[in-house]
Length: 294
Image 1 (cartoon, one colour):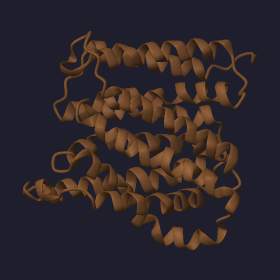
Image 2 (cartoon, one colour; image 1 turned 135 degrees about the vertical axis):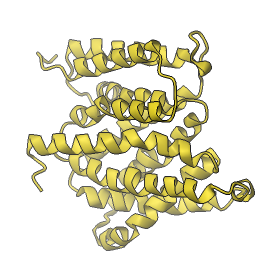
Image 3 (cartoon, one colour; image 1 turned 135 degrees about the horizontal axis):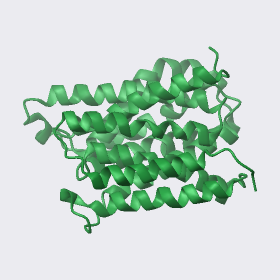
Image 4 (tube, one colour; image 1 turned 180 degrees about the vertical axis):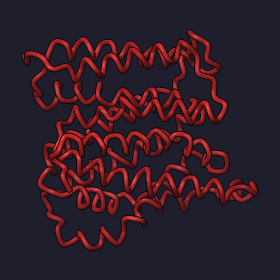
Protein backbone atom coordinates (compact mmCIF):
# COMPACT_ATOMS: atom_id res chain seq x y z
CA UNK A 1 0.00 0.00 0.00
CA UNK A 2 1.34 3.50 -0.88
CA UNK A 3 1.70 4.73 2.71
CA UNK A 4 4.36 7.27 1.75
CA UNK A 5 2.08 9.04 -0.74
CA UNK A 6 0.53 12.24 0.61
CA UNK A 7 -2.85 11.58 -1.05
CA UNK A 8 -3.01 8.13 0.55
CA UNK A 9 -2.16 9.52 4.00
CA UNK A 10 -4.92 12.12 3.64
CA UNK A 11 -7.37 9.39 2.61
CA UNK A 12 -6.51 7.37 5.72
CA UNK A 13 -6.95 10.48 7.89
CA UNK A 14 -10.40 11.03 6.39
CA UNK A 15 -11.42 7.43 7.05
CA UNK A 16 -10.15 7.67 10.64
CA UNK A 17 -12.02 10.94 11.15
CA UNK A 18 -15.29 9.35 10.04
CA UNK A 19 -14.75 6.26 12.22
CA UNK A 20 -13.77 8.17 15.35
CA UNK A 21 -16.29 10.94 14.71
CA UNK A 22 -18.99 8.25 14.71
CA UNK A 23 -17.58 6.53 17.81
CA UNK A 24 -19.05 9.01 20.28
CA UNK A 25 -22.65 8.30 19.29
CA UNK A 26 -21.96 4.53 19.53
CA UNK A 27 -20.66 5.07 23.06
CA UNK A 28 -23.84 6.96 23.92
CA UNK A 29 -25.98 4.07 22.62
CA UNK A 30 -23.96 1.45 24.49
CA UNK A 31 -24.29 3.36 27.77
CA UNK A 32 -28.08 3.00 27.66
CA UNK A 33 -27.70 -0.51 29.10
CA UNK A 34 -24.09 -0.82 30.28
CA UNK A 35 -22.21 1.11 32.93
CA UNK A 36 -19.22 3.20 31.78
CA UNK A 37 -16.86 0.62 33.29
CA UNK A 38 -18.60 -2.28 31.53
CA UNK A 39 -18.76 -0.42 28.22
CA UNK A 40 -15.07 0.48 28.35
CA UNK A 41 -14.05 -3.07 29.25
CA UNK A 42 -16.28 -4.58 26.56
CA UNK A 43 -14.74 -2.29 23.95
CA UNK A 44 -11.25 -3.55 24.80
CA UNK A 45 -12.23 -7.22 25.19
CA UNK A 46 -14.12 -7.41 21.89
CA UNK A 47 -11.37 -5.55 20.03
CA UNK A 48 -8.78 -7.92 21.52
CA UNK A 49 -10.80 -10.96 20.41
CA UNK A 50 -11.13 -9.53 16.91
CA UNK A 51 -7.36 -9.07 16.76
CA UNK A 52 -6.52 -12.40 18.43
CA UNK A 53 -5.72 -14.33 15.19
CA UNK A 54 -3.29 -11.56 14.24
CA UNK A 55 -1.88 -11.39 17.79
CA UNK A 56 -1.08 -15.12 17.79
CA UNK A 57 0.53 -14.86 14.35
CA UNK A 58 2.67 -11.87 15.36
CA UNK A 59 3.88 -13.35 18.67
CA UNK A 60 6.98 -14.62 16.89
CA UNK A 61 7.96 -11.00 16.21
CA UNK A 62 7.69 -9.95 19.86
CA UNK A 63 11.03 -8.74 21.24
CA UNK A 64 11.74 -8.10 24.91
CA UNK A 65 12.99 -4.58 24.16
CA UNK A 66 9.59 -3.70 22.65
CA UNK A 67 7.42 -4.95 25.53
CA UNK A 68 7.54 -1.68 27.52
CA UNK A 69 6.54 0.46 24.54
CA UNK A 70 3.82 -2.00 23.53
CA UNK A 71 2.42 -1.78 27.06
CA UNK A 72 2.39 2.02 26.74
CA UNK A 73 0.67 1.75 23.35
CA UNK A 74 -1.88 -0.65 24.80
CA UNK A 75 -2.73 0.98 28.10
CA UNK A 76 -2.06 4.66 27.33
CA UNK A 77 -3.20 4.55 23.70
CA UNK A 78 -6.31 2.37 24.06
CA UNK A 79 -7.15 0.97 27.50
CA UNK A 80 -7.41 4.07 29.69
CA UNK A 81 -8.90 6.33 26.96
CA UNK A 82 -11.69 3.78 26.42
CA UNK A 83 -12.78 4.14 30.06
CA UNK A 84 -12.21 7.90 30.18
CA UNK A 85 -14.38 8.56 27.13
CA UNK A 86 -17.15 6.30 28.43
CA UNK A 87 -17.14 8.10 31.78
CA UNK A 88 -17.25 11.49 30.06
CA UNK A 89 -20.17 10.46 27.84
CA UNK A 90 -22.38 10.06 30.92
CA UNK A 91 -22.36 13.85 31.47
CA UNK A 92 -21.05 15.36 28.22
CA UNK A 93 -22.89 15.33 24.87
CA UNK A 94 -21.23 13.22 22.20
CA UNK A 95 -20.87 16.26 19.94
CA UNK A 96 -19.01 18.23 22.64
CA UNK A 97 -16.82 15.19 23.32
CA UNK A 98 -15.90 15.18 19.64
CA UNK A 99 -15.01 18.86 19.81
CA UNK A 100 -12.75 18.35 22.83
CA UNK A 101 -11.08 15.45 21.05
CA UNK A 102 -9.57 18.11 18.75
CA UNK A 103 -7.11 18.86 21.56
CA UNK A 104 -4.98 15.87 20.50
CA UNK A 105 -2.64 17.93 18.22
CA UNK A 106 -2.35 20.56 20.97
CA UNK A 107 -1.12 17.97 23.47
CA UNK A 108 1.02 16.31 20.79
CA UNK A 109 2.93 19.58 20.40
CA UNK A 110 3.10 20.09 24.18
CA UNK A 111 4.41 16.55 24.82
CA UNK A 112 6.93 16.98 22.01
CA UNK A 113 8.23 20.25 23.46
CA UNK A 114 8.42 19.03 27.06
CA UNK A 115 9.71 15.49 26.71
CA UNK A 116 11.01 14.90 23.17
CA UNK A 117 12.91 18.15 22.52
CA UNK A 118 10.90 18.64 19.34
CA UNK A 119 11.70 21.69 17.20
CA UNK A 120 8.97 24.29 17.41
CA UNK A 121 7.80 27.52 15.81
CA UNK A 122 6.47 30.52 17.69
CA UNK A 123 3.28 30.24 15.65
CA UNK A 124 2.80 26.77 17.15
CA UNK A 125 3.07 28.20 20.66
CA UNK A 126 0.39 30.73 19.74
CA UNK A 127 -1.76 27.89 18.36
CA UNK A 128 -1.22 25.90 21.55
CA UNK A 129 -2.46 28.83 23.64
CA UNK A 130 -5.52 29.48 21.44
CA UNK A 131 -6.44 25.79 21.44
CA UNK A 132 -6.29 25.59 25.22
CA UNK A 133 -8.51 28.69 25.50
CA UNK A 134 -11.09 27.01 23.25
CA UNK A 135 -10.96 23.85 25.35
CA UNK A 136 -11.39 25.85 28.54
CA UNK A 137 -14.48 27.48 27.00
CA UNK A 138 -16.05 24.09 26.30
CA UNK A 139 -15.25 22.84 29.79
CA UNK A 140 -16.72 25.97 31.35
CA UNK A 141 -19.91 25.50 29.33
CA UNK A 142 -20.88 22.83 31.83
CA UNK A 143 -23.94 20.66 31.95
CA UNK A 144 -27.11 22.22 30.66
CA UNK A 145 -25.14 24.38 28.23
CA UNK A 146 -24.84 27.23 30.76
CA UNK A 147 -21.66 29.27 30.79
CA UNK A 148 -20.00 29.37 34.18
CA UNK A 149 -20.61 25.79 35.29
CA UNK A 150 -17.44 23.74 35.18
CA UNK A 151 -18.17 20.30 33.76
CA UNK A 152 -15.56 18.16 35.45
CA UNK A 153 -16.50 15.20 33.25
CA UNK A 154 -15.11 17.08 30.25
CA UNK A 155 -11.72 16.81 31.92
CA UNK A 156 -11.84 13.05 31.29
CA UNK A 157 -11.76 13.81 27.56
CA UNK A 158 -8.87 16.24 28.03
CA UNK A 159 -6.91 13.56 29.90
CA UNK A 160 -7.67 11.00 27.19
CA UNK A 161 -6.39 13.30 24.44
CA UNK A 162 -3.16 13.83 26.38
CA UNK A 163 -2.81 10.04 26.54
CA UNK A 164 -3.27 9.87 22.78
CA UNK A 165 -0.45 12.38 22.35
CA UNK A 166 1.88 10.35 24.59
CA UNK A 167 1.03 7.23 22.61
CA UNK A 168 1.75 8.89 19.25
CA UNK A 169 5.25 9.87 20.33
CA UNK A 170 5.91 6.49 21.95
CA UNK A 171 4.98 4.63 18.77
CA UNK A 172 6.77 7.15 16.55
CA UNK A 173 10.02 7.15 18.53
CA UNK A 174 10.29 3.58 19.82
CA UNK A 175 8.13 1.29 17.68
CA UNK A 176 8.63 2.65 14.16
CA UNK A 177 10.55 -0.51 13.24
CA UNK A 178 7.34 -2.54 13.68
CA UNK A 179 4.40 -2.64 11.30
CA UNK A 180 1.08 -1.16 12.37
CA UNK A 181 -0.50 -4.60 12.46
CA UNK A 182 2.20 -5.82 14.86
CA UNK A 183 1.91 -2.82 17.20
CA UNK A 184 -1.87 -3.01 17.36
CA UNK A 185 -2.30 -6.77 17.70
CA UNK A 186 0.46 -7.25 20.27
CA UNK A 187 -0.57 -4.25 22.39
CA UNK A 188 -4.17 -5.49 22.52
CA UNK A 189 -2.89 -8.95 23.44
CA UNK A 190 -1.57 -7.39 26.67
CA UNK A 191 -4.61 -5.33 27.59
CA UNK A 192 -7.37 -7.77 26.57
CA UNK A 193 -6.99 -10.16 29.55
CA UNK A 194 -6.84 -7.23 32.01
CA UNK A 195 -10.09 -5.81 30.61
CA UNK A 196 -11.74 -9.25 30.72
CA UNK A 197 -10.83 -9.85 34.37
CA UNK A 198 -12.20 -6.42 35.27
CA UNK A 199 -15.39 -7.01 33.24
CA UNK A 200 -16.12 -10.26 35.09
CA UNK A 201 -16.14 -8.39 38.41
CA UNK A 202 -19.02 -6.11 37.35
CA UNK A 203 -22.75 -6.65 37.92
CA UNK A 204 -24.74 -7.55 34.77
CA UNK A 205 -28.15 -7.73 36.44
CA UNK A 206 -29.07 -4.11 35.58
CA UNK A 207 -27.96 -4.76 32.00
CA UNK A 208 -30.20 -7.79 31.54
CA UNK A 209 -33.13 -5.84 32.99
CA UNK A 210 -33.12 -3.68 29.86
CA UNK A 211 -34.83 -5.57 27.01
CA UNK A 212 -32.85 -3.57 24.42
CA UNK A 213 -29.43 -4.59 25.75
CA UNK A 214 -28.57 -6.76 22.66
CA UNK A 215 -28.82 -3.68 20.41
CA UNK A 216 -26.69 -1.67 22.81
CA UNK A 217 -24.14 -4.50 22.91
CA UNK A 218 -24.08 -4.48 19.11
CA UNK A 219 -23.23 -0.76 19.17
CA UNK A 220 -20.32 -1.45 21.52
CA UNK A 221 -19.17 -4.39 19.39
CA UNK A 222 -19.17 -2.15 16.31
CA UNK A 223 -17.24 0.45 18.26
CA UNK A 224 -14.70 -2.16 19.37
CA UNK A 225 -14.09 -3.83 16.01
CA UNK A 226 -14.22 -0.74 13.79
CA UNK A 227 -13.44 2.12 16.18
CA UNK A 228 -10.66 0.36 18.10
CA UNK A 229 -9.21 -2.67 16.28
CA UNK A 230 -9.46 -1.50 12.66
CA UNK A 231 -8.87 2.20 13.37
CA UNK A 232 -5.81 1.50 15.52
CA UNK A 233 -4.38 -0.67 12.74
CA UNK A 234 -4.68 2.27 10.35
CA UNK A 235 -3.38 4.79 12.89
CA UNK A 236 -0.32 2.78 13.93
CA UNK A 237 0.52 2.14 10.28
CA UNK A 238 0.23 5.82 9.41
CA UNK A 239 2.44 6.93 12.32
CA UNK A 240 5.41 5.18 10.68
CA UNK A 241 5.23 7.39 7.60
CA UNK A 242 3.86 10.77 8.75
CA UNK A 243 4.92 13.27 11.42
CA UNK A 244 3.37 13.11 14.88
CA UNK A 245 1.70 16.50 14.45
CA UNK A 246 0.34 15.58 11.01
CA UNK A 247 -1.11 12.30 12.30
CA UNK A 248 -2.77 14.00 15.27
CA UNK A 249 -4.39 16.54 12.94
CA UNK A 250 -6.99 13.91 12.07
CA UNK A 251 -8.93 15.68 14.81
CA UNK A 252 -9.49 18.56 12.39
CA UNK A 253 -12.32 16.54 10.87
CA UNK A 254 -13.57 14.38 13.75
CA UNK A 255 -15.76 17.14 15.27
CA UNK A 256 -17.65 17.55 11.99
CA UNK A 257 -18.89 13.96 12.07
CA UNK A 258 -19.41 14.07 15.84
CA UNK A 259 -21.57 17.20 15.54
CA UNK A 260 -23.61 15.74 12.66
CA UNK A 261 -24.36 12.58 14.66
CA UNK A 262 -25.17 14.69 17.73
CA UNK A 263 -27.67 16.79 15.77
CA UNK A 264 -29.29 13.63 14.37
CA UNK A 265 -29.62 12.35 17.96
CA UNK A 266 -31.27 15.59 19.10
CA UNK A 267 -28.34 17.17 20.95
CA UNK A 268 -28.33 20.96 21.22
CA UNK A 269 -25.34 22.71 19.67
CA UNK A 270 -25.01 26.36 20.67
CA UNK A 271 -22.99 29.21 19.16
CA UNK A 272 -20.83 29.08 22.27
CA UNK A 273 -19.87 25.48 21.49
CA UNK A 274 -19.18 26.25 17.83
CA UNK A 275 -17.11 29.29 18.79
CA UNK A 276 -14.97 27.29 21.20
CA UNK A 277 -14.51 24.54 18.62
CA UNK A 278 -13.44 27.20 16.10
CA UNK A 279 -10.78 28.39 18.56
CA UNK A 280 -9.47 24.85 18.96
CA UNK A 281 -9.32 24.32 15.19
CA UNK A 282 -7.59 27.68 14.66
CA UNK A 283 -5.07 26.58 17.28
CA UNK A 284 -4.54 23.25 15.52
CA UNK A 285 -4.13 25.07 12.20
CA UNK A 286 -1.44 27.35 13.66
CA UNK A 287 0.28 24.33 15.21
CA UNK A 288 0.59 22.90 11.68
CA UNK A 289 1.71 26.28 10.26
CA UNK A 290 4.71 26.07 7.94
CA UNK A 291 7.27 28.64 9.01
CA UNK A 292 10.75 29.24 10.41
CA UNK A 293 11.69 26.79 13.12
CA UNK A 294 13.25 27.82 16.43
